[in-house]
Structure formats: structure tokens, C-alpha cells
Length: 83
Image 1 (cartoon, rainbow, N blue to C red):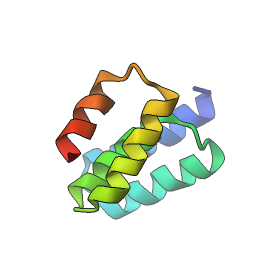
Image 2 (tube, one colour):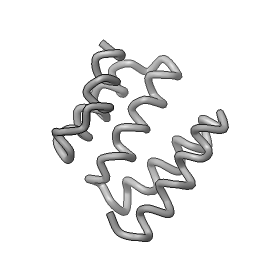
Image 3 (cartoon, one colour):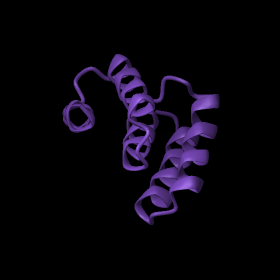
């Protein structure tokens, strides 16, 4: 992960953690436009989508994250949660 993507992810994650879900999703999506394979952004945007009831979209994002980081136990656990 580059420093720029790390900063962008930290900001999106902070918004997510603070419950500012619409802003967090926008921040994750902006990050993913620049770094489409960013595993953490894919994973956590999928988790956010799950939290807001968009299950099909959540599955797609988390599965995409696993293509970038197949060893992510957290992503596997959250995918199971969505299912």
C-alpha cells in the first residue's frame, strides 16, 4: 500500500468507525477509483454495504477484496457474516 492510499484508507475508515456511513462509502469509492485493487477498501466498503442492508453489493465487494488478499481472515469472516 502506498502512503497516499494509506492516508485515504485511514480517512475512510475513520468516517466508517465514527458512524458517518454515507461519507465513509464515498471515501472508500473515491479511493477505489484511484486504487481499484485496494483490498482493505474493498473489504471495509463491503462491510459497510452489509451494515446498510445491501447484501449482494457487500458480497461482491468482499469477494473482490479476497482476490487481492486471499489470506485475509477478517474478510473471510465478514463474508461468512454476510452470507
